Picture 1 (tube, rainbow, N blue to C red):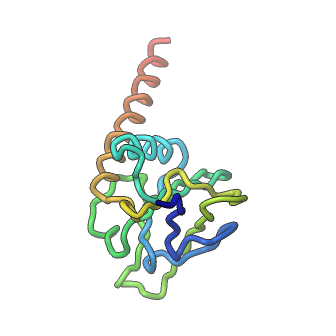
Picture 2 (cartoon, helix red, strand yellow):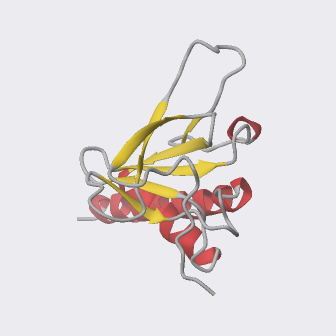
Length: 152
């Protein structure tokens, strides 16, 4: 038995590299705190094996959830969720995402959840459920904050 790290061919050995979306994976992108809440919920409901999730640690703090190629456009995503995959209606548009190595210095990118042999991609249905739950929680917090400020 070995403790070898599972590294798909699209994950670099060191540092980070840009990869074309739609070739090795599709991606769902969510900004900042919402993306982090979705990640937490997804990791929780999958018992820590959520599939590949990458965080940009600077700027807008985008979170990228990597799905099996060809699956992102088959689902209805909520507003605030950006989807990226090959678009058969516009094959001239190409989108890239930064992918960090599994260890070493990968700043400004890091893994929130790594790909595993059991979960090489994020499952869209699990992600949709996590998005719905997390977005509802953020909306509830904002509504409570607005209601509190109305009475102050």
